[in-house]
Amino acid sequence: MPRDRANLRIDIWGDQDWRDLSLGAQWLYEYLLTSPKLLYVGVADWRPGRISKLVSGVSASDVERFGAELETARFAVIDIETDEIQIRSFLRHDGILQNPNMWKSIGLDFTAVSSKVLMASIAHEVRRLRDENPEGFKRAKDEKGPPINPWQSPHLRTLLDSPSDTPTRTPSGTPSKTPSYTGSDSGSPTTTATSTSTEASLPAGDERIKETRLPKDWAPTASHMEIAKSRGVDIIAEADNFRLHAETHDRHAARWNAAFTTWLKKAKPAQRTAQTARGMTPDEMRRRREEAMSRG
Image (tube, rainbow, N blue to C red; front, side, top):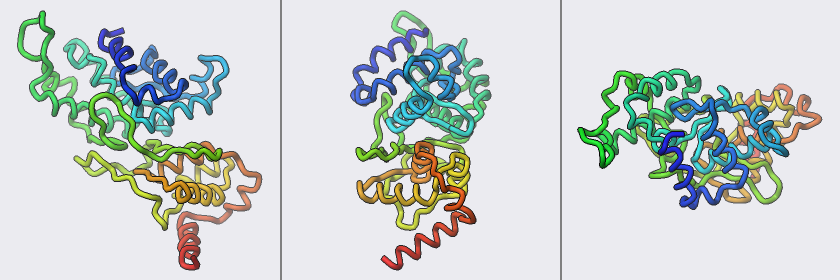
């Protein structure tokens, strides 16, 4: 294991946000960090069912919950459409950008990532590093020579030229928690701002998304309809529960559609989903919502 990665595993215990994570979320992060299939850009396969088989007493849904917790706390970014997860600050702390022998491997692994969301997140993190260290990285005290500068390497050109984005707020230093939409203490599904490639990208250069209350006219999207149909979930009932929960607990989130995606993935199948949702479209649900608002 690279020296800096070992140091990260030790230093992270001084991070209060890390200490606030559950045992399961910490275990998942450690697994990802030590996975033999982890790419040099901090991306690994996101297969909750397969991961759950690595430890006794853990189910695929448990792993999904741990992953959602890591994402809410800004330790990871997940794209459920490509089955990939990114350790968000991997390149910042692993130290391999300071090793010229690794630049080619980093560049190749970046092109092996399928998710546009994760590629944009990786590019964003590397550009932050470049902005903080425009002249490169200082050598160790016992090494002579100019700073090690990876920014001019042709192997990293594709990465640095890629569209840069961040799914949620940009943290500073080590991974830190961003207030986000979380589950309730009443047994409702835990909801987090899960990243998927179906979500709209941030404008170029915009590093923050303002967290707001759920818009009064919010309604599920066509993508939500498909997810609910595939899982046998009553989309109308879940949308009403989601809205009620958000309003009752005065929740704020940056990406409400992503939050509802995770809500649906944790909802229990309904027996009458087909009858309830037949013929229903996002526009129809929005119309029904507007009518209810006008009556209220």
